[in-house]
View 1: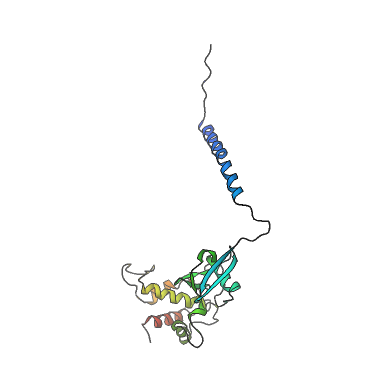
View 2: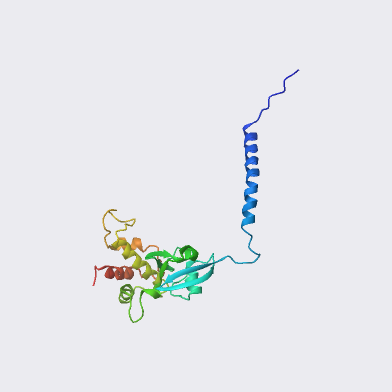
Length: 215
């Protein structure tokens, strides 16, 4: 009696068989996951409760989970000093301080920062009690149209804090030494904030004064 022909499988056949087996094995798991997480109703908006401490005051609000921090500040808390420029993180008009660190608020979701402390231009100073950086911008005419100014000032405050903490930049000569408060360093650190009016030299003068090099 003739022996049966040996089964021959190509590498392609083995890959196809393995993929099919893996897919069949995961079907029960996927079905269980879908049963445990009910589908949202058509037209419903995914929302979450978010608590933020903004300019020293706590706010708890229900937000669409897709809401940016920028839109939360402007549209929900009505703090319109923070500007929406490019809405792509390229112009810096939306810069705020998040737990003391400058950030483009258009590029992050509010739900990612529940419990955080946010400082906007409204929280830095008041017309009767200006923050030193605000006063320096006025003194050195560090603005023209003023649209980018809130972001410029928040970014400048954050940049000076970085330098005081010894955080180097791309142009720092020694990564282990405290950065020098030079025009080159300031231009590098403020390069993410665009001023279409071209008041850059005045902005550098204002930051330099606050940094302690000029009176």
